[in-house]
Amino acid sequence: GDLVPHVYGSEPIIGSWEPARALAMERELASMWELSFVVPPDHETLDFKFLLKPKDAETPCIIEEGPTRLLTGGMLEGDVRLANFRLNGDDELLEFRVFNKADIVSPLDLAASWRVYKENFQPSKVRGIPDISINEAPTHATEDGSGSSLELDLEHYVVPTPTAPPTEYAANLAATPASLDQPETPWTNDMLLSDGIQSPRSAAADFKDDSYHNKAMPEAAGAVAAAAVADRLHGSKEDRKLAIVLVGLPARGKTFTAVKLTRYLRWLGHETKHFNVGKYRRLKHGANQSADFFRPDNQEGIEARNEVAALAMEDMIDWMHGGGQVGIFDATNSTRKRRYMLMKMAEGNCKIIFLETICNDRNIIERNVRLKIQQSPDYADQPDYEAGLQDFLERLTNYEKV
Image (cartoon, rainbow, N blue to C red; front, side):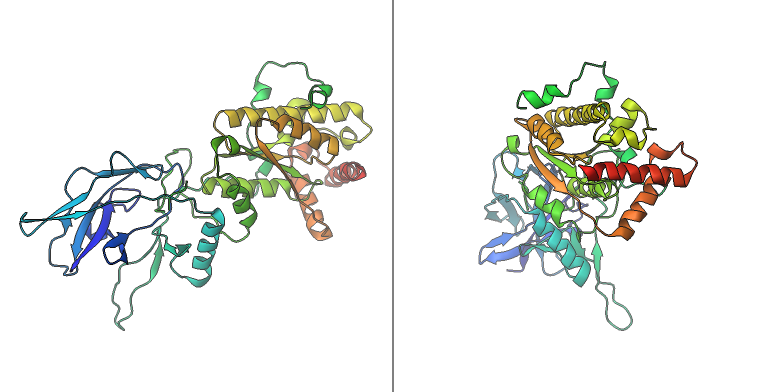
């Protein structure tokens, strides 16, 4: 009749135990009401209750009897009991059966939902399901009678943002090389080459990690590749380890891509880490390596570079064994021999994707080269810009040869 089922509860699902802020359920059938929402698979426990709210705002709400309900991992804890309400001074008992259903929602659907909201300022929906992390604001009547607007409720989203300030070299923000803090062990180039080496449907999520601060949700536009990668991560736990190995010549935007992927995949709820091989090389062999170090006929340089690549890959695999999901391996990886080495290391440990960045726009390449000379630790001790530029162009030529 005049009673409409609602859901209310503490953070992060609604943010208040005030009945006035309760979320209305939608009538699906004559006797069925539903509330759908999206949360990451590892969401914080949501505690809530059902209540019946009269259409007449002056009449008190009726709260269900019994303890608070808890939702963890998309499932209700304990036995799914009836929702009981006492009406008319406890003379009448109204019972509702409660069902809980959790489905995987594609990150592509989420990205599309967000893009629709940004472009058309429409309430977000995922597969036609309202996303209650984007709510209508309370109506505040203005003098001309218009009032309602949309507000984006993102106060509980935490978006790890690995992007660097302009003076910070982005590769320095990659993972700290763990293996270089360990006692050294002999390494040979032959070692690795010879042995053949639910997401329930979504309120805003509150990730409990004090190391991050609340940020705005990243734009969905341009993130389709990351969403497609994330979509592969559904399935058994054993299949959820993924190495994204970047491939490409220097100054083609690999580290830029790695930073964007890291940020977006973290926002989707996947434990993601960026491993920059150049950072390993500088720590292991020093930052002042000339272009000769990268010559294809410099066997000593090749072995040194393969060594640090293997160290970075080993660190990434160790991190995955400790619970990491997506490792982004940032290096040129421009020869078949190097890629074969990484494939053999990944066997039995994780899936592997090679993601190549190709850029033939000379203006973009020249701009990237300038940034390299200005910001890269490789040229921090080179006071002569033109000398640094010439050295880097020679390094680039050495990579192009192979």
